[in-house]
Length: 591
Image (cartoon, rainbow, N blue to C red; front, side, top):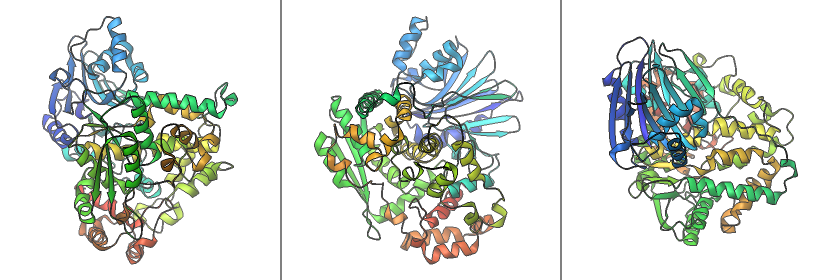
């Protein structure tokens, strides 16, 4: 797990070592153990390293293989690298290191762009071919590892975080109006390739991009699983799906134990993280460290789920650590949390993951986490209303969107709202694609391939990597997801959602955890904004830079400040926090 960056000149010039060094410095929290910069002709590569596999200097990056004429920077982990290495050795390749980075180099040389389909893991990498001059960018199937880009004339920069590119300077930092529409509609999700800034884009997940020497490029999406029943699936009974799913979960969790350092678990006390602990215990894992976080209650809403995480820790004998965050500590952590965001993210649990990761990083470098299960196995409340939908685009929008286009026109300033419903068009494009059998399948595909990437996945990466902590997400194992996509929706929606996953969990996890009301990562102070939180947002939105930016209508802001706790989105988010967070993030980035 690391941070990568670089600059490629397509005009024959030399890359800016100064810009690469600036980006590398910004990425230091992602890789506190080592750093490096390599410049070859028109390509400069920068790297920050977090030592997880092959702790020696032999796996330092940027990694250059002069015999093959390849240079590489890589962020992530290839869980099946040992199997791939054995196969490559059988084809005559020799290795000078013991980690997964060199396997990517040899795999590219052996198999070309098809190598990415053979990788099981999370990754973002940039590779330079000396002889052809080509530059290759690739991102894993779920975009677990980020990759941001900027193009100014004939110069391309890339980095693991958007702030690194901004800090290097020279880009357009004006607001992208369509991205703003997405932000306000999809609770801060801005799907690729856009970001909130016009001058920065992101490589879509499951995509490989190949730049020629002159800057021309082509993209190829290498993974797009069908959400359909395959031959024989309709004859399977519930017990068949349970058996297949349990086997796939065991494999997914086992894969993510690959490391040369200990691996722990972020334990919320919900079904997903509890199941991970249960599977690790079943596999014989000993001395497992687990970590939970809780907050003060507000407006009568409890701020922790320690009763359930404690139960799981006792059941499986983990070395459990609880972090309780008083309100004043939460307030103190907000600036650091916002600064750690590659893009503005409104979910309250950002600060929870930030503070939890700070504590966890004092004990351990790698954890498994339960993100993705709700999107993969139908755990959210907006799926059941779609079962009998005859207009999935409209019906999905009613249950998922924060606000309609018409309402948004009364909230954004006139100069920032277009006549077209950009977010509605995006829903139509994704939900209407072929390859999904039912409206629920269509919604699950959209959420797992788009919304998941730029909300919980990005959130976990940003907050853990702010403290040099690697988070692995077994529910996003691609083979597990391919299986889940085939499971009939009714098996997922049973039992209040995630029915088939709960069936499997019952084999390992106490019923008290499974049968309780669905929990969230509660941070009530940021949902029911009052006191110092209210004043912080008021000061931010009243600042001169915010007034000059003029994103929101004054009458809308007045309504929010008059009754902040009354303006809650359909998905339980605070509208005031949504608009305030955006401005706080922009100011934190110096935009």
